[in-house]
Image (cartoon, rainbow, N blue to C red):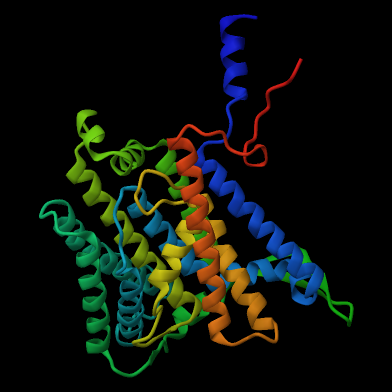
Length: 365
């Protein structure tokens, strides 16, 4: 066997990394949960449209969960994302009603730029305070959350519904997927429908995955979260890397606000309330560590889908009270935190993982 072929064989026999293992478990849990819902509840769960409904309703949550994942991989936290979404939605709704722009594409473009600008402003401000003034990120982003909620109320204490017909006509545009549709009782084919916001969320997940995996800044964010001193020794500009991670998080928060507005074209003071907690939970369920250095936006995507599926199952069951949703989320979050602890403890103490938690392609003679 040549040296090259031996190296390829060794690489082929490598077990899953901790991040890949946790992500795989998240994907398996989502698949098992959805399959169980199909068997026990039937109905809509057996139609592809249910998956698209989950995407349509939670597109904004997928994006801010990616925003949280980037910051958490770098060892930080950002609990202002929900407040930034609320402020973005309210500001954009007021802008659309008062701008007087009659051209649909131009109004959408200007609204998107406004949303990204608000998110970027919060990202720059919070990133500067955390990175260069070295203030605790929890305190900084908590203040950012209160600031965003206060500004939202200052803009309007009453709900603001978008009245721009040009914007609404674009919002109501759906992506039709006939081959994933279903046949109604009258024999008509009902195609599956996906909103533009859901497509934006999927593109964001793919882009952030490629960015974190292959871009230089993405690798620096992982190194920063893994060990700050080691990152410094490697010549990484720690302050700039942390600052840019918060700036990216702010941009994604603004984008999430725009996607939310496209799904529900109305703003009020309670928009996306507590969504930052759901985003953190989705990131952890997807395999992201609160201590940093490990995570994957693909896992975060499935973590969001797990929370969305639980919400849908509970809503369609007799146990449709809100506290059952909170209890289910808490139990699932606690399970994944314990699972992360077990995996990391096994690595730190050099213990072998159970065979069912380890995938290896090594062949026995």
